[in-house]
Length: 435
Image 1 (cartoon, one colour):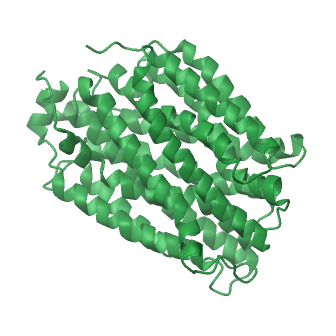
Image 2 (cartoon, one colour):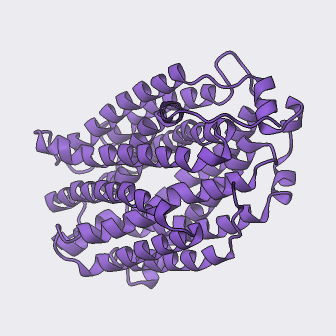
């Protein structure tokens, strides 16, 4: 097997630049879905069920995209056709979803329309997102993988900052942040429009700058003697996966369940704790929604800063665990902070956990998969460790919500406990040493 060449910084950058636009779309989705559905009329006790669709589509789409792209060879590349198609569909749906309440439909019909649009949006975002992880796995050598995923993490967080701030910024420049009952404010609608435009421009940049290896080159650099050897059924791949795949997956389970509860309940939690209301039709609730976007952006910026600290740890497992514990403390603080500016502190702490979750699992797992082949299929299947916990958490969300007293802010303590459990599970991982 030939050694993959070192890539310049800008080649590593170009591999992931489109991720910036994809992450803007993802930030708009994760930061505003609960707000949109609450505005349309969803009950808080059933709110978590609206979050089943995104991870469900991810767990279905990502392995399919990974497996199909493993065996796709065409003039446009191997992974790039999938990210381009996914981005194109996402752009179309981003122009529809925030308008669910603007078509004169009943509350029930608007919610169904919103659910269908959300399903399409998350399907397309997953289809566009996965190829970027695969490109790094395909074309970056083990020595540079941590750097490549760090660049991807930076672009991910930069895109998140922009996406999360859009509603706040558009309100500041004069767009309305209030609307009739059941209608999403213009500040949110135009955030989705501008996010869609940036997404397609970023993906066009990556597709124009990145040239994937042809089948012969790929086989030489990835230890596959014949293209057909990339074929394999998912059950066989999972059965033969390295133990690290499953141990990192265990950590992922608790981490992503924690963040699912944050995305579901944090707008109401901030509104309840700081503004004293969870009434979705009130102006205070919409102000809380904008401020939550600012807090998300601060979390993302803190994540970027913490990502520069992580390499200073001599032990990657220690860095991983410490980051999750810090994030857990941040979650647990939220119910006790009643000032909107002091609320920044918990989200800075949460940013530490987010930085570790974005970079470390894929670095550890792709190193462990070296020589296994089927990189796209494996990374698609590994995405199940992101999606499955969110599905479980979403299905259990209503029950957990009742058990903690039907207070959205208390759900943040649940998230903190889940991150602490994830930190404990890091000790089970046996990391593959890379020269």
